Each structure stands twice: as C-alpha cells, then as structure tokens.
Image (cartoon, rainbow, N blue to C red; front, side, top):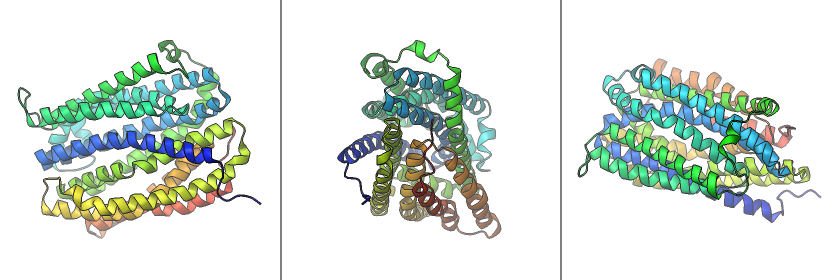
Length: 449
C-alpha cells in the first residue's frame, strides 16, 4: 500500500532545518527593510512613499537576480546529488555573469533617469522628488546585491545555508545603525533623510558581500571556489543553464514588472495608498519568511533526491510537503492578522493611511494561505524537478490576463475603494492554487537535466 505521508525522517529534518535557517536569514533581511520603513516613515511620510516606489524597481532586480540564482540551485543540486563539484563551479560561473550584467543594466537606467522611471508609478511630484534622491544613490547597491545573491545560491545548492544567516546579520547591524545616524543626523553625522537611508543600504550590501567572499574563499570546504572559477566558461553548461534559467528569469522579470504595475495602479490612488501599501508589503514580507524558506528548501531537497536517483521517494515526499505548506500558510495568516495592529502602531502616519494599512494586511492574512501552497508547490517542487516553464505560463496568464485588467478596471473605470482594488490585486494567490494542485499531483514536472 502506498504511503500518503513519508516515514523518511530525514525529509522532515532536512526540510525544517533548511526552511528555518533560510527563514531566519530572510527575517533579518526583511527586518532591515521594516526598520528602514519605520525609520523613514517616522521621519517623513512623503520620503517613505518615494522610497517605497524605488523599492519597486529594486524588487524587479531582486526577482531577476533570484531567477538567476534559482537556475544555479536547480542544476547544481542535481550535481550535488552526484557529487559533481566541477559541474557546480561551471554553473556558478554562468549564473554570476548573467546576474551581474542584469544588475549593471538596471543601475545604468536608474542612475541616469531616476525621475523618469518613478513617473511610471505616480504623478505625485513631491513623492518623485524624494524617490529620485534615494534612487540615484541606492542603485550602486545593485551589482553588490547580485554578486552576493549568486554566491549564496551556490552555497545553498550544496545545502550550506547558515552563511546566509551571518551575511544577513551583518547587513542588519550595518543598515540599522547607519540609518539611525544618517536619516536623523545624530552626533557628528549630517541629517540626510532619504539619502541617508540610501547610503546605509549601499554600505550594508558592501558589508554582506565582504562576509560571503571571506566565507567562500577561506572557510567553505565543499566547493572551494576560487576567482579563476568565474572566468572559466563551458558552452554545454551555458546551454543547459539557459534552458533552465531563461524561463525562471523571464517569469521573475514578468512578476517584478507586474508588481511594479500594481504599485502604479495603487500609486494613482493617492499618497496615503502608496504609504499603506508600502507598510503592508513590508510587514507581509517579514511575516511570510517561512513560506519562502520552505520553497527554497524544497527545491534543493527535490533536486538532490532526483540527482541521487531516488525517484521512488518523490511521490510520498510531494504529498507530505503539500500538507506542510498548507499548515505553514494557516500559521502565517493567523500571525499576520493578530500582530497587524501592533506593528502599524510604530508608524507616524495619517489616520487614513493607518486605516488602509490595516485593511490591506487583513486581506493579506487570508491570501497568504494560497501563497503558501501554490508558490511553494510551483517554485519549490516543480522547479526542483526541473520544470521552470510552468511558473512562467501560470504567472503570465493569471497576472496579465486576469489580475492587472480587473484591478485597472476597478481602480479607474468603476472607481472602487483602495481596499477593493487591493483584493483584486491579490486574487491570483488563491486562483493559482487549482493549477498548482493539478500540476504537482500529475508529476509531469519531473524533467531530465
């Protein structure tokens, strides 16, 4: 009789250890964003709104770079199952080139045309002016972030996840301390407001890159990466990487553009809506870290299991993981609902912004259950199995044919309230669950790499 839940204790051990370690790393990263958000929000709501829009640009970069990193994880975790170290190094070299080039291109656009880019999100001139000051400085963090992300993805593909925690801890202390000194002008430091927050972010990205370089160069014993490994190029590996990663990068870019489009829709509903969305998005990120950690952990586990040739375990692993995802979603939604009032209390915002932020987070506390299931299934199980096209197809259809058109109609034709528009924008998190359930349980996502 086929087991529904696996009795393989190593799955639970590996899943929860990796999930919690990655979640702890992410909670620090998003905690830094929350501290940024609170500090600049207490300083000036207009500055916070401007920075929130710049963060939409950074989110696009984040998604693209994460796509490049996920490509490394998917391929390298298979190599790790076979203990093919040289193969992992070749994949890491290709992934690094892709990530750094993407980061440099976005840096160039944001540095030269910050105001033009921000006008895509809002017509508010005061918000654009504040955002442009921040953007022209913070864009220097983009290539630093790209290099760090690729190095951490390479480490994660061989089940080395603790370094991510130390990297994030370094970023947290650097960012929070410099934020406090430079935003408000403490002691000998000048009061720079949003520009101070940007300088703190660049310094934090530089510090975390130094930490990961020290670890990779002098402490890691699994891969023993050296600078020369990143100058080597293997055409066959590049072709394999392109086959796996291009759909990932495309789907991540489409998702990032879609999130920017959503911010643009909300941005035309007023400064209070921009600020409320910024708060809700930041709080959601810090509450949902376990969900994203579970997806990352799953991708490595599934990829390594297939690389080891243990296909017999896949079905029972898949059924077990789906139940775990739903449980994590329910816990996350409950936490978000219970703590939303407490967190918003830290902000110095208008009553209208406060009310909207509460409403937005109430909606998110429901939709996060869908996020926990469908996102982890598709970006964890399916990607780990080598299927990267389903996410591209699924996201494109739901986002561009359903969510964006309905939300735009609600906002600009029917002039619905911001909370109704927000519900429309988050509806895909529930709609995607049906596709995820069908596809994952069909096992058509298992691909040969």
